[in-house]
Length: 210
Image 1: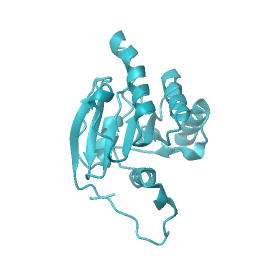
Image 2: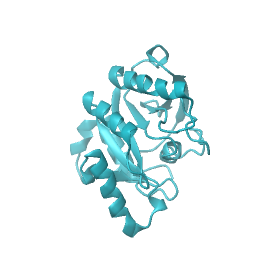
Image 3: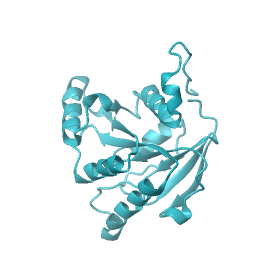
């Protein structure tokens, strides 16, 4: 996908602050420090559209971004960081669940997993909600540059077993070397317009704006 424009719209904690439901939305979710902000900036070819931090747990609201004027990207708050205040931890569940349950324009959720970490209770809870509400899910294993290629298979199997998902449904991604960039964009584009899934295979694919 060619990114022509990417603009921050608004941050919200509940439906009264959400933007109008007018275009499809792709949400990104995952544990704090899973590499979500870096992934979004990489996908959009922006250095700092989404703020990254050395301190996990900084994203405490739902952040909406307008992409090309054709769809919204939603950065969901991270979870699972021990030093986040108790009140913030308690607010995460209702905030995210309400968004997933009520947002009719949500086309898919990109769910991130760190290749070095076995998914825990919060990850499985979020997967349960996505299944409960019938939301298409794009599971992505991040930071694959952090392990050697001969170790990847074992790490991926452990994540698949913990989540109960088939190994084949996972994409892999590195914000450092952009590995998995094209594959992830293809999956996002299909989610935005499922009718394109069966498009002519000889048609030239859309490129990025490198």
